[in-house]
Length: 432
Image 1 (cartoon, rainbow, N blue to C red):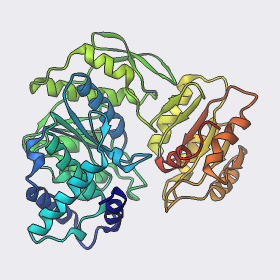
Image 2 (tube, rainbow, N blue to C red):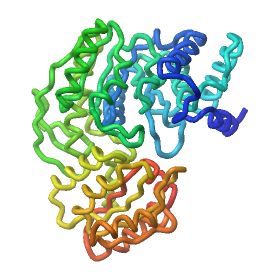
Image 3 (tube, helix red, strand yellow):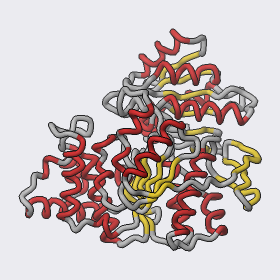
Image 4 (cartoon, rainbow, N blue to C red):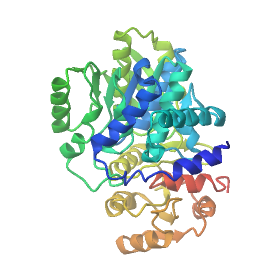
């Protein structure tokens, strides 16, 4: 069986956004039952479950890199990814290969059929989570960093039984997942991650009402709330990273940009403290080395040679963080932006944030079924501001157009609006 055939079969499954006629708990129960049929790999793994709206990807990479540097074997499940879906599943930074992927897929199908189940009930994202957990179980990794999706109570990652740690990144409105803005209601959809006996960590900049809600659920479930925030002082920031004092560590470099990463780092360091308390051997020298080299494709990813920043910010909170970073760098010239949105983005609020801080915009059509066309986005920008707008008929031409437009300046190019925008650009020629 070829990987293309497996992809085709999985992609035919019911839509993630319309998971058949089943309620949230039923969907979780389905995944839980399949896990039991394949030997309940989650019960034999030390899982760090990352849940929230923004920051899971950054936290996941930082945490995985620190553990890998400490010579633990680490399985990492993340989404979305930009180039190849196989990148969603990795061990020690190496994505699952096609043979291993097919092995897990066929093994799961065999067990479902042996137990009289229906393979067509599972949706695409559920398949990926099951394959990841089966693969990590077969590899017997020391730790698993498991990032939740954006599917609320029916998120398949909630089917795991006994996570070692549940860590909440920033909880914020996300118009990709749902038209909901009430933070407490959004938090309600994420409470299924908290299990009896786990340790719960929360993002230090969390909304107060959200934190109180999480604490209440932690008490109700007989879990442990951990709160020992590190002292972090920002020394200086630039597009290629930040220099920080962290507790007794002076001048630590975090090779990620964006002031919001300080809060994500704080959450990761709390997780590290919990792991140490549970017996993990993690030295400062390894932590420093990992953070100085950490890189996240498509998340405030800076190409110093080309002076281009790629950021998959797809909601107002992500765009606000991007703008805050741009303001903090005190650039000599306003950036030139390559933008592409999805139709269900809260595009008006995102443009309100971005347009005052750009000298010109080139619009592209993201590589997604629900993409807003480059022409439509350009028309919206023209209606909202006096910023000069050009349309890239082909995403592969966008970077070339942007570089031509900034030819007489040293302006940074910022590519943002959606991970699907980055995917369209990456598949073009970024070397212009």
